[in-house]
Amino acid sequence: MKPRPANVPEKAGEEGAVPRHVAIIMDGNGRWAKQRHLPRLEGHRRGVEAARRITRAARVLGIEALTLYAFSSENWRRPEEEVGDLMGLLRLFIRNDLDEMVRENVRLRVIGDYSRFSADIVALVDDALARTAGNDGPILAIALNYGARAELANAARTLAQQVRDGEIAIESIDEQTIEQHLDTHDLPPLDLLIRTSGEHRLSNFLLWQSAYTELLFVDTLWPDFDEAALRGAVASFGRRQRRFGGL
Ligand code: FPP
Image (cartoon, rainbow, N blue to C red; front, side, top):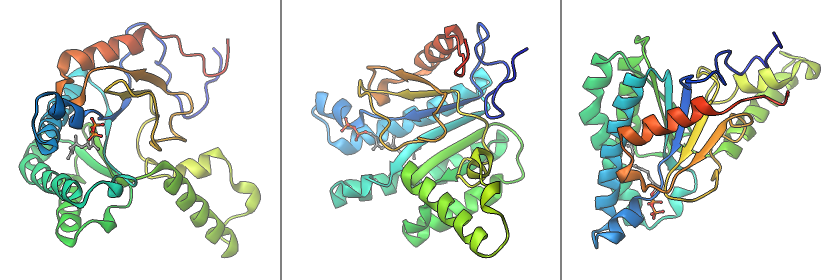
């Protein structure tokens, strides 16, 4: 059997394989609301419901890790009121869903620099991380103030510091060392990345991790993305032949 790169799963590419790690760019809340003449906040509210639904469905399907792009480092550019609304929803999500995560053995992870959020959110997130730290079930990773370029710059800075302090040799820096310094270091390789709402962009999300990821762009607006849509995405992954640069 041909060796695969260390960062790709063995079973991927097999007919019907379930992706180990799925990431989602949850796009289209605003348009969903606009189509219904509702405030954008209502779209985001329904977006949180969709996130909850999909998190449960991913567990049922046996997906080991689900990463959701909840707030990008570029989202600060939105009007203050909308940023405030998104923060409010994040608070509610953690408060309302933490017990279920603990009960369902979910390991919560955060990627991105959430220390820039208000102190009460940082405390809520820290508490949620601590309460789920002992779990060993499926991973739910939430991207908060996440940007892939910043993540890579942080890894470069940390490694440069280690070289300067004489802890590691320049020659020892390779793909694996870089991966170990990304926010996703303890997540499985990213198999499938879904973006909803018909946009075909990665928007600074998981740029390193998506080198061999299957990309799926669907027209559905995020609040309408349901269990059947997730099953469809998983089935489409199972039909694809992944060659990882080979033949
Ligand atoms: C994109 O819709 C969505 C966001 C920028 C935020 C995503 C956030 C949520 C779904 C809620 C928070 C989730 C959790 C798990 C707490 P958009 O506003 O860019 O839509 P548009 O492109 O149609 O305007």
